Amino acid sequence: MNPTRIFQTAPRIVQGAGCLSQIASEVERLGGTRIMIVTDPGLVAAGIVDRLETLLREGGVAFHRFDQVEPDPRLEIAALATDLIRQEKSDLIIGIGGGSAIDIAKIASVLATNDGELGQYFGIDLIPRPGLKTIIVPTTAGTGSEVTPIVILSDLEEKLKKGVVSPYLMPSVALLDAELTLGLPPHVTAATGMDALIHAVEAFTSKNAYFMTDMLAREAIRLIMGSIRTAFANGSDITARRHMLEGSLLAGMAFANAGVTAVHAFAYPIGAEYHIPHGVANSIMLTPVMEFNMLGDLKKFAELADLFGEVTVGKTTREKALAAVEALRILSRDLQIPAHLSDFGVKDADIPNLAAGVMKVTRLLANNPREMTQADAEAIYRQML
Image 1 (tube, rainbow, N blue to C red):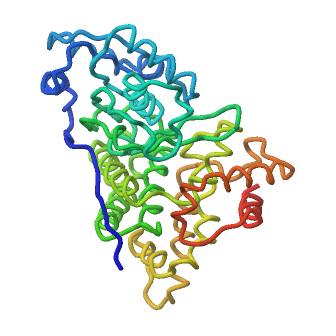
Image 2: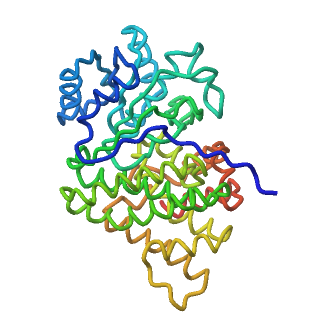
Image 3: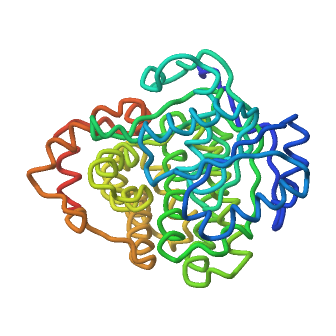
């Protein structure tokens, strides 16, 4: 029997170069009167937050700012943001920035209206009540978090990244302005762009994929593969930037409904313990996990080669799947992404504990197209030392 499918995404998506200018009208439409901006110091220094705040002032919107978001944010950052939201009696949150700022905005929106500690909400559908309304403005083409009901935070005590999944985390509005991504440096463009591509690839090969998520993942892959090198090498190309943002959006829609797989499960322990940027951690682990996984669904992995634009005439299904793996290896090299875990201080003696961390991420391993053991996880990590 075919399982019941439920597709979810943000109820309103605003797109277009310069569309940040509509932010005050979006706030008014949602009935917001006391706004909390959640962002990070880098966005403040870049002047992007000033642009947002000027637009809000011109629209007569009252606001406060929380700008202490850090990369791979800790649970404590979410608590600080929530405390300020409650103190200022905010009724709407604008999250602007990369995945970290967006995730803090989303989790703070529900913590502000629910009792209890954050730790009790790690898992699926454990948040009892809706949160404050949110407008999410991504400034990187990477996480797709503007259209997902998922938040990822770092638990330093357990040295692991943990997820909260709830429909109450779905943003009220996603606002995508490609002009905000023009200033991204090449290394950030590379890491976040690869993260978006990996979202699409994992959604496409997930055990939970179906026709709607496949449709979105295919188009996301085409958009990202067709523009990521240009966005990396020529960051002022607005068309490439727009296609990257659109690809990230579609990939977010795809994985929000099909789920990601073992690549992210491998990235979480090394990201939490060694502070490897999320997109870089995913990129390092991508090809060995894909090569392991491809036997679980050779047809799907072979199709990836065609989506990547590889020449596949005369190749067997397995050869096509391997061609897809090699195409991603070359892409990472072109984008100058680090290739080895040892570059970040990971040693062979660390691998058993890291692999044990992978096996704890059961939410993602359940989507993986091939069964995996801890011995498999250790062998995959060792390939990338």
